[in-house]
Structures are given as structure tokens and as C-alpha cells.
Length: 409
Length: 120
Image 1 (cartoon, rainbow over the protein chains, first blue to last red):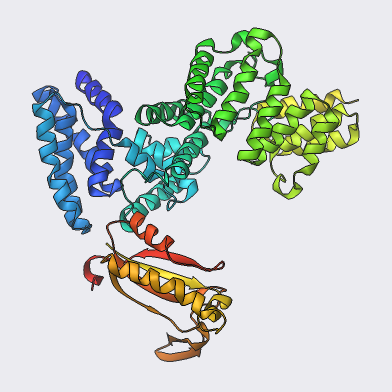
Image 2 (image 1 turned 30 degrees about the horizontal axis):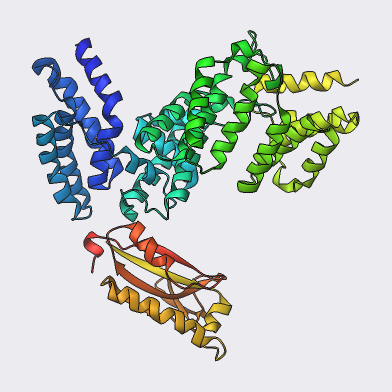
């Protein structure tokens, strides 16, 4: 029994996303494909202990899921053009069973559907995690700090939209590809969490999904090896991930990037990130993820050189602000300039950012406090620290900032 | 699948369809669009609509007809016309919607037509 359980679990891990992509692309109904596939896995748990695990578990699961899916399609009166496609699934399953051919991987289509502009942006990341990686709604809900029921509703709304509005399960055209790919990458990065880990600290609530985000990006890279920004995003996440251990002391207190013990960084992850970045550079098409990864790469060099080349970082932030002037990039540039030239110059850049856009942006207030303190404007610094502490979502970061205020006499 | 493309216009754009100074420019870009939709063999109906100040709204309240002057909801942009098109998926519908020569204030809402009992 346990052996079968293990076989089913392994099949689920290896092929959930693949089978779901294959079934969804033909039914254009993700929710029905999920139901049908879950049924097929349940049937496997009942059947395989008696019959043994089939040679090609995926072909077996596909045939089982197809039956259920046709029932569902008839029941829901989905687009009549979908039914022939569902019936043809049997032929594919048969071919698979007869040949050494590996199962077609259509997960890329699924990724692009999840991050389709017609899908509400706040649903894209959860949708991807659920349909491509098979994570359950409760797990996703806890990572996004919402009630499982609310997350379930959000996911089901998105799936209904895919079915009823008739989203296309195809790769975007060449002219749409850059913006559509960026939406996929943004959704993956949102699963990873905030990347700017010096002033901001790691966004702890998404911590549990960091590994999933990296897996998802690694999958995307296998499917789209010719896109430098995919390399860039994976490199960026690996650089951040390499420092996870070093970001907290034994007792759990927060350690800022400049104070981190470099021997606690993961050399293997940094090496992999560097390899990816070098590979991306060969395409000669720069993008914001590559630039962000390059910034992290400069930070990583401290492990070898013992110092941080803030001038290079400031230059890269200037480039980043040109192509992607996000609040994060503007604050990052101000921090880099404060380190490479002077607190006053960094401060001048911070003052250029419209205040209403950073009202609740914690890293802005943390940096503001830090620079005011360096400029010995202690009273203003205290006010800014209080604001930064009030906007903190992470207790270790909160304690770190409290210690910084206490240092002001 | 059938989709309705609903063209929303603001006051200025409604006026631009009939104003002698701008109407040639408006129809000069709209007619080629209509032609392209027809030639693609996807056109399943449509009409341009008179401005919202010509609209009349009916509600039934306590079994009585309540007829009012004006559109159903007062919004800055109002429905100025629609196409019903028959295309394979939303992405294709979006491609056709993107070709609509919208003015600066306008936009296109795309809605799938219901299938099943309500299908014409």
C-alpha cells in the first residue's frame, strides 16, 4: 500500500503540471481538468495496488482523466469545439503507451494563461502555483496572508474567467512576447517575495514559497532557454536565496546585508547565479531582471574581495531606473549613492521621489531614517524610524530598527 | 466563440462622429476597420449607437413601468456602438478590439456571448 502511495505521489509530483497543461489546453477548462486529474489519481490509488504500477503512469492517468473530463464537458456544455479535442486525447495516450516518446510538455502554455493580461494581477501568482505546481489553496492562502476560503474563491474566479472568456492556450505572438513574458516573470518573482534585501529585509511571509518560485523559474528556463530575462530572474532569486541563512543570527535577529558573515552565504547558489548571468549576457539584450541580478552579483563579490563596490552598484541602479523606474529601484539607487558618494547625495535623490508614492513603502522610511541619522539630523531620524517600524511586517526587522533608534542619544 | 466588442466613447468622441470638422477623420478610420472585420469573415452583427442623450431607460417597479430619460447609468464613457464577432478565443477577440481606432478617452469592453440556451 505504502509503495503504491509513493508511486502515486511521485507521479503527482512529476506530472501533475504536465498532465494538467495537456488536459487544460484541450478542454480550455482548467477547473474541470483539475477535477478530472484528481479523480484519475484517486483511481490510481485504488487500482495500482491490485494491478501494479503501469509502465507509463502518465498514459494511464491521461486515459482515466479523459473519461471524466468528457463527462464534465458534456455536463457543463462547454464550447462544442472542445469535445473532439478531448476525444483525441485517447490517441495521444495510446501513442505514448506504445512508444518511448516522452509526454509532451505544454506547461509553458499554462504559465502564459495564468499570467494573461485578462486575469486579475493579484490572482496570477496563486494561479500559477496551484495549476503548474499543484500547491493546494490553503498553502497558497497562508503564504499570501489571506483566508483559505478567500484564496479558494479568487482561484475559482480566475479559472471561470479562463473558461468562460475563452483564453487561448497558445504561446503569445512574437510581438506580444516581451510584455507577456514579463508578466510571467513578475508573477514568479511575486511568489519569491521582495528582492531588495538590504534595507527591506527578506519578506518573511513569502518565505515558504521561495523554493517553489525558484523551481518554477528553473522550469521556465528549461522551456524557454533563449530568453535572457528568464536567466536574469533565476540568477536574481538565487543570489537572494544564497544569503537566506546569513540574514538571521542564531537567535533570529535580523542582520543587514553589509553586516552579514559572507562565510554563511551559499557558494553553490552564488556560482549558479553567476553562470546564469554570464549566459544571459551573451544574448546582448539587457532587461530589468538581469540588471537587478547584476546588482546582487556585485554584492556577492564581497565574499572574495572583502569590500562592496558601491560605485558599480549606483551605476547599475541608474540603468535600472532608466528602464524600470519602480519605487524599489529609486530607493535602491538613493541607498547606493549614499554609500558610494555621500549621505547628502543619497538624501537628495530620496527627496526627488513623490512622497505620496512612498507613504506606506517601508524600505523608503528605513533608508530615510538611516540617512538622516548619518547626517546627524537625529530628531527627524527618530520620526522616520518610528514610521519604518510601524510599517514593518517582520518582527526581526522591527527589532533591528528599534536597536538603531536606541543608538541615537 | 462569439464575443461582443463594446466601444465606449466620451462626450468629445461622440461629437467627433458628426462634427463637420472631425467627422471625416473619424469615419475615415472607422470604415476601413469595419471593412477589415467583414472581410475576415468574423462579423456576426453590430451597430453604431446615437449618443446617450437620446437614450431612454425602462425599469419595472412594483409591476409598473418606470420610464426615464437618459442612459441606464450615468458614466463619463458611454456605449457608442458594438460588434458581435465570431472568433476562436479571447486573444483573437483582443487582437480585433485593438484595431478599433479608439480616441484618447475611449476603450473597448470584450464580453463572451453566452453559449447554450441563450445562444441565438
